[in-house]
Length: 438
Ligand SMILES: O=C(O)c1ccccc1NCC(=O)[C@H](O)[C@H](O)COP(=O)(O)O
Image 1: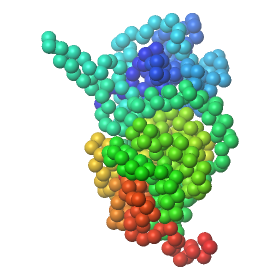
Image 2: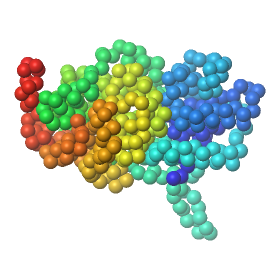
Image 3: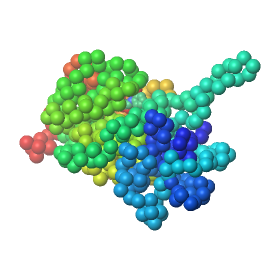
Image 4: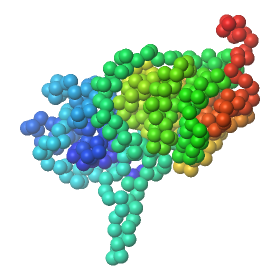
């Protein structure tokens, strides 16, 4: 794997993998650390780098502990540098200071060390491109060659690199202090996991998370007559336990406005904000927009970030769905102290192929046993089209399914739901529950 960390322009510290350490449009880093004026670059930055390394490059904890940020859109600017030094927290770096640049060999070595650490964890998505020109000249005829480090290796990596810039811009426009006020004024959240379990018990099939999505990178436009509120209401009427609402604009043609409109429309189902989360700011944005749950993708977030993002989400009343694609990612997630909901995505993001046997594989043997012992609810995700598909993932151990394309492409999504399960799931089919539910 190539180096995942990069020294961003204006920031002399390795930052890749650090959630919330975003680059603004001007290329200035927003999360860094600064030494006291008298200390040398080397000693202070080494101290910071080792602290970053010790935290697995997580910055979500910095957001929790109130670290000061370089950018005006900081999450928390209340603590003084002195206080933080006294607490042994990250020190604050001022990108405008006159500190000398670190020696290039130091940068390179540090980047390698960080890349090795992230690779060891099995985080397959690099947070941002390596530095260097996208094309470079080769030979006397000046062939242009693509710089591999600047080319996303798959669609998820491309989305994450784009999201990094987008979030930095959104943070500039809406600081977290503003979002916090909206969160404080928001209605309390609904029980996402409880709704899935309840519907599964009532219907005898996995609880349905029905996805409100207009388009996707793999399928292009899925529903040209896209009316998010109409679709959401039809899903609820058709027996969905929860809804998943795409908020990414660039790749899925979704929006936070869709989430807000659905919440405001009187739909009762708990809502998952389907977003590519790389920064705690997005958790506040999701909560302020009416979400009851958020998605964290283990291919994108190192372990520390999964932990701290989960903590922040839960402190906001949000349920957390952690998504895995492989055995390795599942093992990382099962090593986390608290996990309520794990999603197994059947879509291979290298080639977009879906294989529902992925869910079966990941739930076999010891892993499946651990999941059952810990009472973790498993969600089968992507590529589910028929009652036979539902049966496969249910038999494998899924108590819930997340379904988009096969439902949203139908003119009447209720017909889509009945077709997917082979029966009407809007009614309670478990007679022993009918009495208590009445
Ligand atoms: O669907 C894609 O093309 C895609 C590409 C890159 C990242 C994520 C992607 N999909 C997100 C999803 O996980 C699906 O929307 C979800 O599981 C529903 O899948 P489906 O029922 O197959 O629409």
